[in-house]
Amino acid sequence: MLSRRGQKFNAFLGIPFAKPPIGDLRFKNPVQITESWNGTWDATKYPPKCIQPLQGKIEGSENCLYLNLYSPKFADNRTSLPVWVFIYGGKKLFGDAAPYKYGPEYIMDKPVILVTMSYRMGAFGFLSTEDYVISGNFGLKDETAALKWIQTHIHSFGGDPHNVTISGGSSGGIDVNLHLYSPLSKGLFHKAISQSGHSLNSEVVHPSGTARALAWDLARIVGCNTSEIRTSEELLGCLLEIPSITLARASLKLMHDYILPFMIFGPVIESKYNEGAFLINDPCKDIEISSGIPWILGSIPDEGSQRTLTLFSKPKIIKHFERNAEKLFAEYFRFTYHPKAIEVSKKVIAKYMPHKYLNDSFHEISRIYAFSNFHLGTIETARRYKGPLYLYCYDHTNDYQYLKTYLQLLSSSTKFKIGAVHGEELISLFNNPLMYPPVLTGNDRIVSDQIIDLWYNFVACGDPNGNAPKIWNPVIPSKLNYLHIHNLTLTMKENYFIGEEYEFWKEIKTPTLCSRISMVHS
Image (cartoon, rainbow, N blue to C red; front, side, top):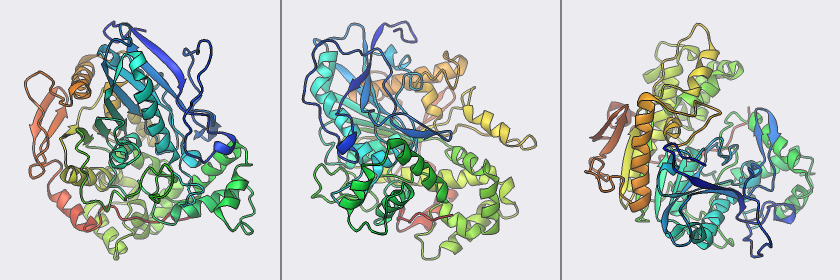
């Protein structure tokens, strides 16, 4: 294959990194492959994506624990190149590592080994009975299994197992943050990049009891006799007999049964006594993250437009909101932990929409979601982290945005003006011919080159500046200095999203920034 600048590189597709999680291995931790194979492995075909709902249909397979590996043509077991691992996002429900979505052509301009992997999602990856029977966090453990495979085998492809960087966008960025906490991932990577994802978010870790209740709901929907099931073992026994497509359809139904159809299956806190436990401490209760690993962390100004679009594309939900705005605002924006949740909702509505109907408040709702679920948590994460942290704000609006097209379809009479939105930076990093032109031009190309340079320098040596003059300094918590990536300008600024709006949200969220809530049926 050829990179954007004409560099030759190899693509090894569909390499298995764990045994297929099928049969008795469903709802179990990934199992390492210890057997070798004879002959030649065909690494020229796309592996199956993990089973998932997509546009109302079910696609993929349970047999999906494969990775893709890209290496420069010159790389072999005598080279020692930095390793860049990317974890895709998708609300723990959908997504895959296919090169037609996360094309390697831009990154492979650099002398680096790029790895993308699939991991179990939805119920298959995150169902939990909150005990040792179905411990949960299987998708995160799949990612860890891929990192273990890299430690064992990457040298054969020309990579350095002692120089591995994990990166991810959106929920993939959250996963990166959780790997920094996890005892299971310790020593498997050396640097981290989280794009629009942090763990100080009420969506991230399920409150105690919620995941177990969801497991029983799922079992009931697929036909298990839950009135007679008394133990987790009995529940597992029934679920193992259910066809995968039936489970996936039931997961889709659960999404529609709840008012909050976002990350309905997600991470849980496990007992430290669980074998292979991934997450044993609540990120929201840890005052500091002290891994010491260099970390790039950042977000985008208009993070809320994508989710607000989901809300505005469902007129029934809009009407539901307007009938009971204060209560549903509390649910939708995760205020329900607050002892005065309705009062909090009233304050938010008064601040952002004092004279507007919900249907005319697209930008205001986008701002509410962006600040309460992205910017505030990013600020607090930056202040807590005890290690080299590089903070950024990606504020470049690409000429082509798939979100703009959907926004225009919402209403011919409403014009939504949006800037840089959730996922925008991925356009700079990966070729995605399904969503935008395969060749970036003009300012988009220049910004892409800048981002690739900064990210690669960090992957290679832990400093995004590399050997060039220093333009990006690590965070000083009292200053919250960050790199502002605005069109063609890279500028160091201070007080990351700090201002009157921050003070408003800090007052509302304090003292528990991301206290848990339970799911609410519609």
